[in-house]
Image 1 (spheres, rainbow, N blue to C red):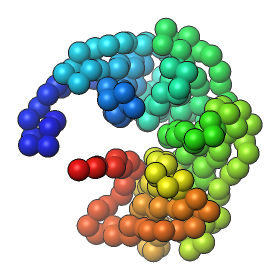
Image 2 (image 1 turned 60 degrees about the vertical axis):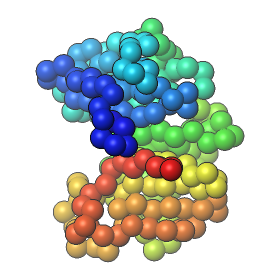
Image 3 (image 1 turned 90 degrees about the vertical axis):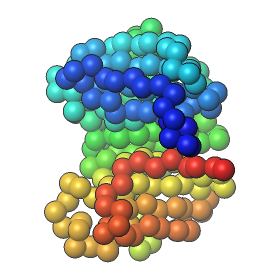
Length: 216
């Protein structure tokens, strides 16, 4: 949809599937993906043309337990964080499995750092981790109370800022006590891991699992 509300294209997930990924790639095309049998990844041009299609099976029966945010790495492969198996899988464009890393919780999203490492939001494990060189060993883990003055609940989208920092979406829907606590839905950290800014307004914004920067 354009800024003036004009629809450029519209792609729907098949019946029984869930459209869980929609992101703009660095080349300006869109990456969309739905959970189902098979799970499907599309790369879509600016006018809605289908540039590529990848189909694969997760081995997870219930679509809602499959994935949320798929990402594409510099090698042209897809990183698929899986809820039910606590894994992140690297899938080639032909649908073949290249690599798997086992983590904890319900991995929601991945993000890439300038040094080539990968961040993974671990959902209900209340943490996020940094993996060396893509999907290598864990070199850093930020747990629920490691950020001063903040409690992490379901760690959803991670979004690196342009200043070497990080935005964290702190979704609070799986904890019955979260609504009584005074912890933000979105946090911005600087390059030293200190809080720069936070959004803490549940009445106005509700629960937030994903954000996107908008530049004029």
